[in-house]
Image (cartoon, rainbow, N blue to C red; front, side, top):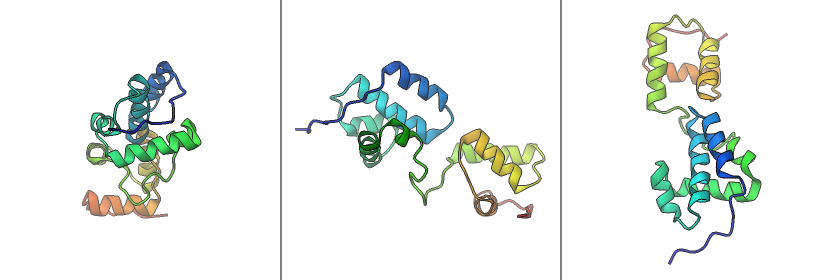
Length: 146
């Protein structure tokens, strides 16, 4: 028998839906908000089903719910160090970056860094962008780090 959760989702469904729309394109925040919305709609739903519905691990859903109950919505959405060692953009976003590099003339790492921040809401250091280009995208062009 699943145990009962003590925490309640304080925000309304309308607020959570509006926040989901606001964070469209930012996968991490969208998944967290989707989790809250699902738990608000069906509070008795097991976390294993919630994790399957949003396509994340059950462990992540447990961690996010704990973060929400302890620190609130702002801490959940703006968690800077959610998975520090993990790649922060997914394959489709990586392909979008590859297409941008092929189609447009992006000259510097700073321009790529700014584009990634504006487009996907992720922060990469210049060295991390250089590694991303060289190792993940197998870029032949050499970008200079200023």
